[in-house]
Length: 323
Image 1 (spheres, one colour):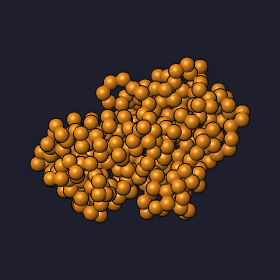
Image 2 (cartoon, helix red, strand yellow; image 1 turned 180 degrees about the vertical axis):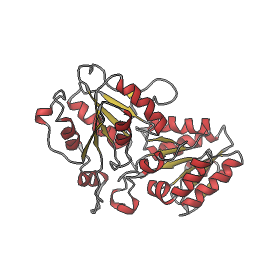
Image 3 (cartoon, helix red, strand yellow; image 1 turned 60 degrees about the vertical axis):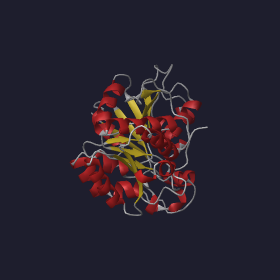
Image 4 (tube, one colour; image 1 turned 60 degrees about the horizontal axis):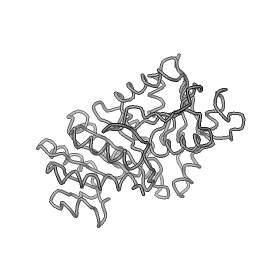
């Protein structure tokens, strides 16, 4: 049974800390009473309360002192409320801080707009020097956390709330720049590109119905990683449908559209509207139009897309094409 990303993070960090006394854990009133790191290493765990900017500033000082702090809070408060501190500490100073941001996208569902975060890629990817990751599944999360601890480089790691999918397999220590899931699909020139938990789940659901569709999964989405991914994608396919739980502005799709010169890039995303009704994660995604129907609609214009003729309707589809 796979663990949700936020749970896998806590478990992996606690295991790493056993052999590395530099590892510290800071949380902004999110850890609860049974945080495994706090139980194992109470002298290295700090709950700073709802003071997210101060938490990043504290971590910057600790990093300067030789520690490797990991900090965690809700994605909107990590990426937006603490944005200036992120810019100065992780960006300008290059402090070796890892920010783990659960409840990204609209995974908080009923918490509403204040606790939703559809803008964090736009904010964090605009800050040079920060590795931005959106792991899919427990093993990817654990691998990204290990990489951050090993390198001591600034990281922003986005995850959801309770989703616990099994990671796509890969070879090696770290998730690859592009994790290909396209066996037997060379005849089709349209490739699905998935980012994050929701984007990957939607792509995998469509592939179950149309196994011939190529699929490329991206875990790392900062600009240096995307530049490498774009070169690899362009070697194999001409058209791309990028699926992500983010707004179109500042999205991974918008970055790839600029990098994939001469290729067509379409985007299935969370659109520009503010969700105004509470509900489960899936209900809020449906309100925003980020669902299977939207992905089928994005595929429909491509004459080679399997099942295009009977694709259901959808929304939240943006199209960008470079020339």
